[in-house]
Length: 193
Image (cartoon, rainbow, N blue to C red):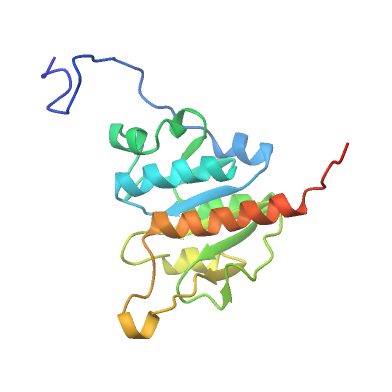
């Protein structure tokens, strides 16, 4: 049993399952809804946390690149607390081409970047919406940022004093995704029967 789990902790039970499969951008974009694109997230814990949060906030899909980024792994599935089974994850050859495709389908692209001119809580998220988050350490790539309709930021209270310019990517995703959800919920008509 220890060999089957490759040194991972277990409780005397091992299950063998099929490898995770990826959805297609064509299918998820046609269905509409919020798409969360990750520009090179490499830490499986961050990817798992973002998938879990995106699912909880009501996103339609998470989009990741094939290269220079983590894919669906056992760690990602574990950290997502099972959300990988419910939220489609799309793996694309090139994030910038995926953004171009979404734009051609009428999506508004919002890039989360510490250099953004607008605060995330002041911008209007026009549907259909795509939210782009950068990688750990360097944020959005320049070519990716140029494809965004809006660059938004999360204002930091202690920016100059503490020397911390941004949040961890999975924390930042949670902040913005739940603002998007709050706005969507408050825009929905209340049915008083």
